[in-house]
Image 1 (cartoon, rainbow, N blue to C red):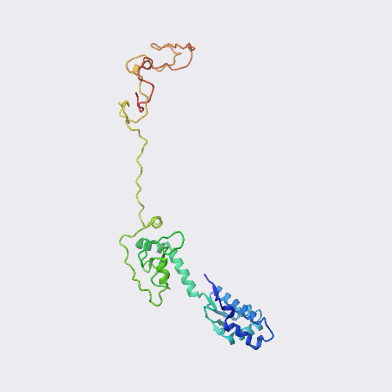
Image 2: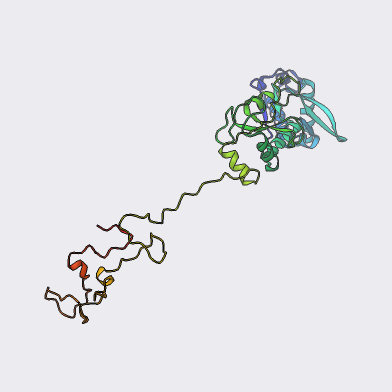
Length: 312
């Protein structure tokens, strides 16, 4: 992200205060503030458009308010060392002093490299294979990293072995924030930690495993299905099936009397049938009710249960 930062002592920088000693400032106590506002306007434009401290003359005129005032302010700033005149593609321009303690502007190459790193870290065609190869371990210190949640020293990132260049699977490694921040771009070769070898058995956390599985880079973990409990277990007293049906099939056992050749056929007692027990409750002869099983009436064990229920 483009930005500019003013130093804590920028407002009282000696080069800026020197403006008050110039003849142009005589009798104009506001002149110092005008120069200060002019410089900060130029810095903001350079930071926004990534011009690396250089502003063409059109930007200078806009910041000054007019071409005449721009000429006066530039002459003043050149004399105090705040600006210098340069050529920008054949056009007149000015360049600010590069002093981080005065005004620090992020340069174009730095910002573009930062953007490239972010693109590489979010590119699944790069992140997936690198994560599959290295797992959740930093290739510099060997500590396990995490990829989600708050930023911490153990947050996982992809580190570029060749800073300034677009990453490839071969030039990217898993790194923790601590090692990546300490190594930075290693332009001076001070980073002395050797790169650890590729792990033979990479460790994948829950997030990494899901990330790789969703992209087809890792086979999903087999999950054992629970055994079905819909079938009833055989219990004592269950009537065996003579037709080969499952022992857990819910069917009503036949009436003992009917099985032994009795007259019980499950008719209502308003129908005349041999062997039907007469009603002793005084109910109407036409009451539609099922006559009890003879075996049950005589004290037998039959109670109309299904044969998958335990019988006394």
